[in-house]
Length: 175
Image 1 (cartoon, rainbow, N blue to C red):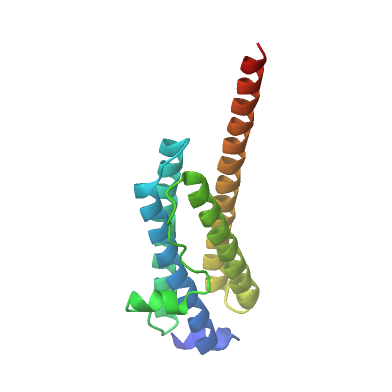
Image 2 (image 1 turned 90 degrees about the horizontal axis):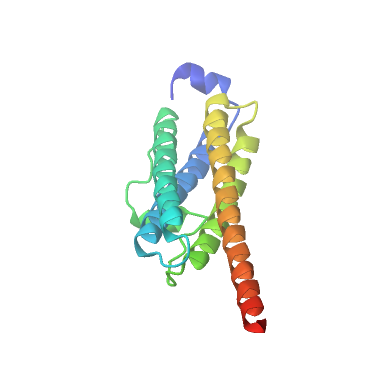
């Protein structure tokens, strides 16, 4: 970290680097969770959801990039061995054992909610103390909130489709 950067921050640098590395690990795990989910997915609206999973995977990878750059700027080293990602992450990788897209959406929704808490924590930690890290975490938080909304919308749309299909079947069997 540059001398002026050291003078203007009032944060414990070791603690900040630990939290940023945890978030870095979580972003890599989120990237893979989306990427592999897009490959194995089955179910209604698959093409649309697959496309969103691929887009979100790219965004998670971008988040990892921003975090790595910030960790280095602060004089730290991003986690070097992927084996350590799962050890460091508080938001865990959820293995997509069931390829049905509703199950994958629910897993990713849970992961996004964990990420939202993570970036809220970093924003609160850095607000007024480390403006650069605050801005990075605020930007990521914004995208994670958007991801949560995407998954809630898809789940609601699928539920509405199911309700419509059930009502249609009921009305056809009455005739």
